[in-house]
Length: 166
Image 1 (cartoon, rainbow, N blue to C red):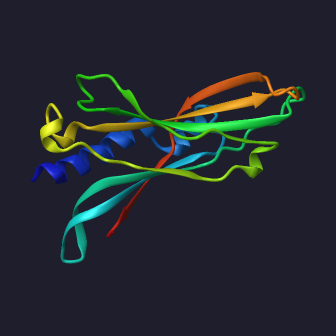
Image 2: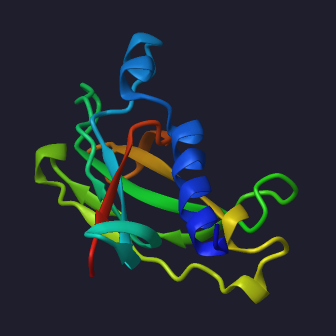
Image 3: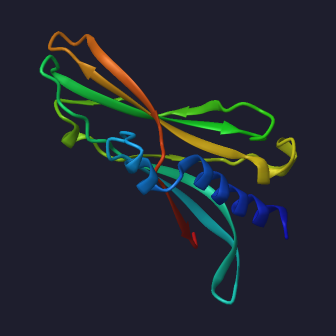
């Protein structure tokens, strides 16, 4: 099995381990605010019409639905991408922060995306197969005077995987 195939297979397993099934999240009572992160992969090799290798290309995050609070005037959100170059031995570090979206209500939010550049084999301690990503959401509620009322942080649990032949 090539390193890239192992990278894709282990990335999918890593996302499943980090994300877990959405039903488990809901039954555990964890609030995800309805946001969904989609990991989009580009096929780099295929055989008989089925992909055999793919590389993570971008993450698209559908916005959350934030509950209104009586003392708030507006809401905001952003997502943060964290990466570990060797998920078993190195910590996750922030590699991207999306712009902050702020609106009178969360129905006015729009999806955001980020194109990833997965490090080359030579730039990772044990090769690409050990590179792992997490998506963290940050939520903000603002008072009428524009000051921050409260905030929350949530690590995504319901991530989708999309393989495309781009």
